[in-house]
Amino acid sequence: MYERLPNPVHSVVSTLKKSTMTAIGAVLALMILMASVFSPYFLDIYNLQSLIRDLAFIGMIGIGQSLLLIIGELDLSVGKIASLCGILSGIMMMHWGWNPYLSLLAALFLGLVLGSLNGLIISKLRLNAMVATIGMAGVYGGVNLVLTKGKAITGIPSEIHIFGKGNLGPLPIPFIFTLIVLVLVLFFVKKTKTGRYIYAIGNNRDAARVLGIKVDRIRILIYSIVGMISALAGILYVARLGSAQSAIGENWPMNSIAASVIGGVALTGGIGNPAGALIGAAIISVIQNMIILFGVNVYWQSAVSGFVVVIAISFSSLSVILQERKQRKIKLTK
Image 1 (cartoon, rainbow, N blue to C red):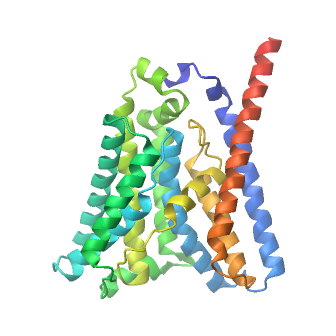
Image 2: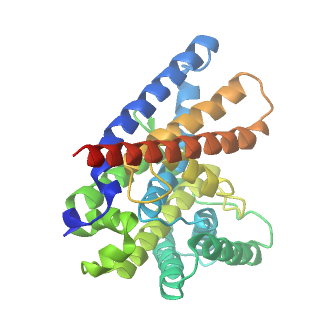
């Protein structure tokens, strides 16, 4: 069914994937080489572990965000979902006396519910995804402040800390979780019928409906998945800090979109690979790490990230335009 969708962009998806992944991989390798040459501390094992731990969170949220971008949507409430689920896990452990692991599972389920709520509101009320998720971010952020009264929830059990602070061999445990999320998402996208349909929806939603694809149901499913991924990231960050705070995930919406777009996911929908979001997250993290190592004011990180987003979006849009022109020329010569 998906293969017959009448959209000219679909015919260039595989080409864009291969060329984009190769290009961003080369950019990442070049940046790592430059950083290692200009800073003797970049390849220090502790610096690399810190860098990888940071990119794990951007990468995890980016992988989820990439699914939404592929279907032509986005979610600007991912950071607030992450912080709310992290805060609730802390409250369940510290105030309600729940078993720590049961608290974590409940927080994951909450993320699933909040993501589903976003999807239902957007699909059933026909709301713009950007506007709706900005509004829901305000709701979730308000609940965060009510629950915490602006204060951190401390005393998280030490047995939970390992999930955020620990390593498995040389790799930080949050990065291991990110790799697991990536494998599961890639399996969903490549090996399931529903996963393959997300490209059809992103390419041409109306055509997908005509061909019998349950578009709204799949949109809600993707928002649910992203909500759960956000909750997992929030829980792991609470484990890293040893406390639950409403400030968790403040920059995650922008960084996750940046990571996805840098990784070759088109804002127009229908094009991209979730694996690219992880490489995009690595590029962002290397840039931020270089800012610190080179002694640049840390507050420039947001400015640099914003600039990277603009550049990435520009190149993403340009690549799609050029590919579409190329396809039109090919058709005219036939």
